[in-house]
Image (cartoon, rainbow, N blue to C red):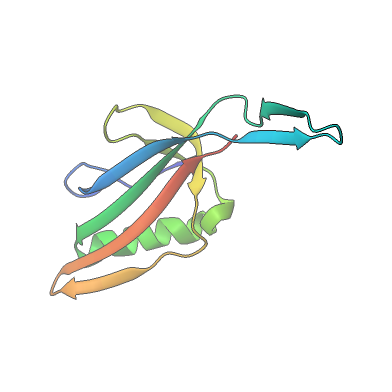
Length: 118
């Protein structure tokens, strides 16, 4: 399984950076007005919003190539949480496309949402 690319600084993300936990609860409503609730995932899922604002053109090309190799949301890869250092082996991209923006000479930006899979 592929690993998310590491930037030339040795990091996998830049600030601002956010992460969170995803829960999914299924609610079944019955005719008598009662309901039953249960967790749809065996464990909570993790998600990271990775904003990369200080990329050089080579780093942006590397991230784009990795996204293409993973076929966007279809691929699976290992992502290392930048805060805890924990590696999550079953991750994928949440958005269906990747955008890149040239901000200045030699400076590019992109935004990714990465999530663990159930």
